[in-house]
Length: 183
Image 1 (cartoon, rainbow, N blue to C red):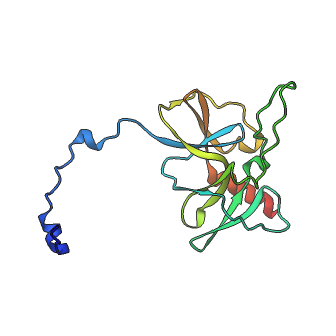
Image 2 (tube, rainbow, N blue to C red):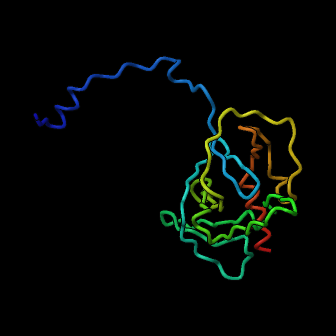
Image 3 (cartoon, one colour):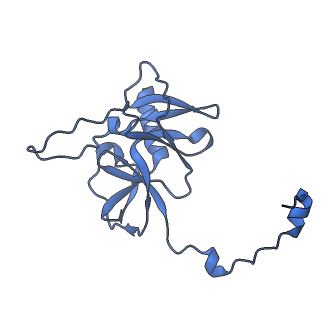
């Protein structure tokens, strides 16, 4: 096997063929969605997101249970919220069906932390399972009946794979929650 100097290896490589217009454009729109109880939300277009499995959450004393605490990501303290503690996200089940125990924030094997945003505007959200890739999205003509806490913060609803997905403005929603905690 011949060993080349890095400069030799770089100069001997063939230049790739340029991409044509068809190769550059996407054939379908992909979005990412996450679930909290019975509700499904989409990560907004252009919003950075990061998934943490079984994160260490540092609690904050004397605050509402919906504010779980914070996580340390690259030296930044990011608040972590339990949306299920703010709104009722459970599925309404028939009285004959056995009651499932409500998922606990401490069930790390079932819940993950999704960090939304960038810089000082990041916020952590406890989600059920892993985010899903959403394809073949159809816009709904109207919003469904929403929990009161979400009414001013959901901008749209979409259907994909027979599931309703809500477009939540996480910035306004969590700003409103932070104001309530501060009051």
